[in-house]
Image 1 (cartoon, helix red, strand yellow):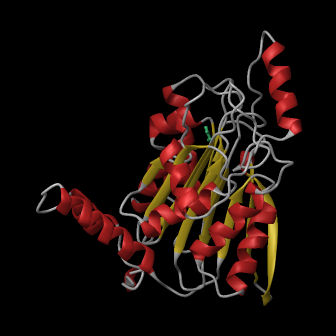
Image 2 (cartoon, protein in one colour):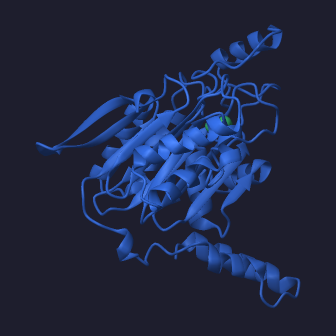
Length: 340
Ligand code: GLY
C-alpha cells in the first residue's frame, strides 16, 4: 500500500470516526475498489511480445514514448501514461490537452481515464488547467478509494499533488473559437473536430494489459458536457484476462452503446479483436443516424491480437511491437482502420 494511500485511508477513517460512523463508506469503498499491485493475479499474466496501439496519427509519438518507458523498466501502465503525456503536451493538436479546442464559452475542459489489468480504474472529467489529466486519473486510481473525480474537486486534488495551474487555451484555439462564434451554420467536421481523443492500449512483456484515454472533448461543446473518454466501459475498458478496447469519435454515440465494454465482452465470447470492433460499430449504425458522426474502436487482445474499425473512412491507429526478426528493435506502423 502506498504511503499516500495509507494517509488517505487514515484521514477517511478519522473523518468517519468524527461523525460517529462505526463502519465508514470510505472503508467499504476502499476495500472493494482497488486491488493492490502487490497481489499479482498470475492468470492474467503471460510472457510475450509487448505491443502498443494508439488512435490516430498522434498514436505514433505516443507509442514511441510508451516503448521508451518500457525500455526504462516501465510497466504497461507506465507505457500508457508516457504516451498520453506526449500528446497532452503537444500544443499543435487541438483535440487533447494543451491547445485543445474550447467549449462554446471559451473554456478548455478535459476528460481522461486509465485502467490496468487488475481492473483498477481512475478517471477525471470536466477538468480545467491541468496539463496532464491522464496522470491525474492515475493518481485517483492509485491514491484514493474512488474511481472518478470531476471538475473543481479534481482540480483541487491536482493542486494537492502539486500539479501546476496550467492555462491550456492557445492563441490558435482561441482564434478557432472566435471564428466559430461568428459562423452561423456550423457543424463539427467529421474526423477533425469529432475525433477529439487519443485512446491507448498496451501489453507489456509480462502480459499485463493497460489502457488510457485523454481528450479535450468535442470542439465547442456545451459548458459542462462530458464525453465518453473518462467513462469506464464507454471510452475505455480493460479486462486483464481478455483484452482492452478504447473509443474515439463522438462520445454520445459511444456512451449510449457502452462501446468499449461491448468490444471486450464480444472478445470474451470468442470474437477476434477485429470482429469485436466491427460489431460495436454496427451496433451504433443500427441504433442511430450516423451521417454526421464518426466513431472508431481500437482493441488489443491479451494474446497481442489487434483490431480497429470505424463508421466512416479516415480513422487510423498506430501499432508498435518488436521486429519479429530483431526483438531489440521496435517497428511502428500507421494502420488505416477504415479498411478493416
Ligand atoms: N470521444 C471524446 C468525446 O466525445 O468527448
